[in-house]
Amino acid sequence: MKDSNSEKLLSEKLDLKTKLAYGAGDLGPAITSNIAIFYLLLFFTNVAGIPAGLAGSILMIGKIWDAVNDPIVGLLSDKTKSPGWGRRLPWMFYGAIPFGLFFFLQWIVPPFSSETSNNIWPLFWYYVVIGIFSQALFTIVNLPYTAMTPELSQDYDERTSLNGFRFTFSIGGSILSLIFAQIIFYLVSDPQQQYITLAAICTVIAVISLYWCVYGTRDRILAFEAKRIQLEQPPEIPFLQQIKIAFSNRPFLFVIAIYLFSWLGVQITATVIPYFVIYCMKLKDSQVPTVLIAVQGTALLMLSVWSYLSKRYGKKLVYFLGMTLWIIAAAGLFFLKSNQIGLMYLMAVMAGCGVSTAYLIPWSMIPDVIELDELQTGQRREGVFYGFMVLLQKFGLAFGLFVTGNALQVSGFKETVAGQIELPIQPESALSAIRIIVGPVPTICLILGLILTFFYPITREMHAEIMLKLQERRGNRV
Image (cartoon, rainbow, N blue to C red; front, side):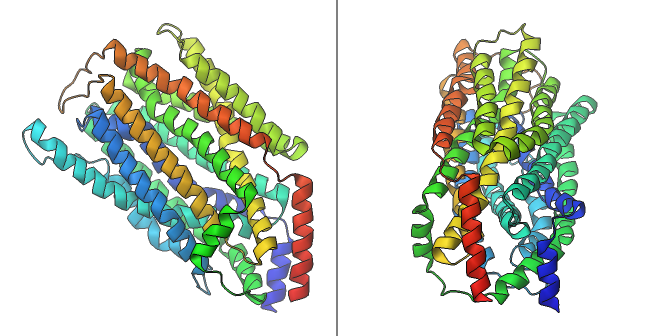
């Protein structure tokens, strides 16, 4: 009777309640990672007083560890057995509160020494340790969450819709965090208190949203798990052989490369845009969230548009349209003058159109790759594929953050001394470096992503054929 109920539930379209709950699972990680992407490097240099090169190294170390633990968590979540929770949900349930706590600890500046010069290295190691724990806990809650997509739906277009809900919450959370930043920066004058207050609010929202996802998707996940267990399981493939099989999957290599270049563009731009607004456009730091909201707000509004166009014309065309707009905007930022504020906002809107496709399209491709792998190997290994996808992406991001921080330091960027009220005047070499990092560097990444997307092999027709063969095989097993 239980099996028939599971079959019935899985045969039904996803209801709004489940889609909303699934989307909420990305709200917490999005709010916290958005604040970290936009402000953590700025916080290290302008509040904690850490030189830009060391600050970039802190972020790089955290991202490298984050990348290393991704396939480990992915593999372990594939092997998790919990009759009442499935394979993914226990990780989110037990990891939510520690994840929130260590995110908050990143925004404290411990007074290790009264001498500013003696405080730099203790702070460096403090943020390295906290960053390692914070990134590990981010993986523990977020990677099993991302691996849930193919378990909630096996429909090609419904997955795009499901990811639309996910990224509505994701981008909506990013906008919400920026609105909080705008309000807090306006009401609180002390820079350190600004970030502590912002981190506390984001922590509470992050933890609550993760539990919403766990309880809201549980029935559908357990239905999928019951069906998966019911099927005859083939012999388990050793871990090293799984890696070999994953990287012999040609479409998978395309997806991780497309995602890597898309998110290098996102990460590098997001990290340096506060510096660009403050030092190149000569605006106050309280105006940074407004520019970021223009990008993220556009990305949120465009999600439904891109989702509709994807169903009608395909994923490739949507990606090409969005990235082209973003490339024009990124290239244009390099030439902006400080009095061209209106043009800056126009480019922020254009960039937002591209950011939206960077969220939506690569994550809609990866479940198709997983089904191709299942057809070839007989195993469902969502955790392995998502883990290695994010691993390579984060190695790239770690490199991007390291280069960004050190490029600023080499160019002569002057960090703020702890307690200093006025921001230091930056040399022309530092301003030029900021312009290059915000414009030409992301442009190159996006163009490389476009080239790879052109050659991506899985079409809607090919996916339909894969699913037909899988259904025939599953029918023969029962």
